[in-house]
Every structure is written in structure tokens, then in C-alpha cells.
Length: 153
Image (tube, rainbow, N blue to C red; front, side):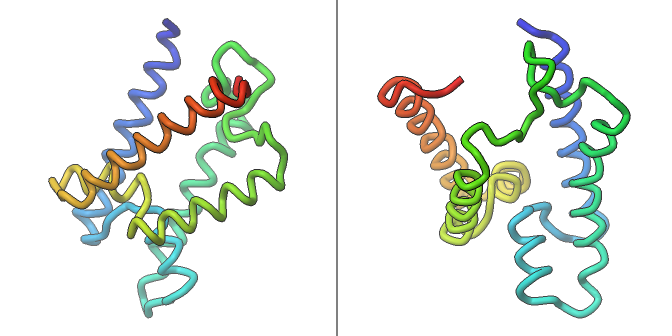
């Protein structure tokens, strides 16, 4: 087992949890990315945009800062040249996948960060059902891609 990646995942999870608690405690808001982006773009509530923009800037600038510093954090384990999030199937496939994720967050009334991190912490039955659905769909997708279609890494 690669302990460095496990520790990085643990630290990342703790930071995500702290940021979700901080956002809830300071502004009374849930740290669900689809809700943050969706309300910033579609509804534009007065006086409610600054924290959303700051949250998204932090979300994007953190990994860019690590990459700029030449840090190995976030790189794919045992593949020094690979970067997490690098599209393996090409940009058109990533665009289709992004649209499907957007459709799914609309149908599920939220995303994994909103339901999986914040909703489960609030003991929401709806978030539990959504999170179980996310996990089952991911397991089925990985099985089909790797064992039925013969693809995957």
C-alpha cells in the first residue's frame, strides 16, 4: 500500500470537512459545488455572490498552486507524468461526461459534495439515498468499463 497517497487523501478529506463546517458555521450555507455554481450563474442573489466566487477561486487555485510549486501532491501514484483529472478519453468525452454530471446533479438535487459530505453529516435520509446511488452507479460503471468493455487503466 502506498502510505503517502493514503495520508494525502486523509489530509484532503479533513480539509474538505473543515471547509464544509466553516462554511456552514460562518454563513449557514452547504458546501455543495453544484448549488454554489448553479446559484452563482442562474439566480445571482444580491449580496450572495462574493463568498461563492471566493469558494470557487479557492477550489481551482489550490491545485494550480501545488502544480506551480512543482509539488508531487495530487499526481497519480506510480505515474510521475500523469496528473489527476487529465482527460484520458479526450476532451469531447470529458465534455459529454461533464454534461451528464450536470444533468445528474439537477435530477438528484445536488452533487456528491453536497449530499456525501454535508448531507450525511446532517443525517439527511435523502442525502443517504443519493450517496448510496452515487456509489452503486460508480461500482457498476467501473465493472462494465473494466470487465465487460475491457477498458480502463
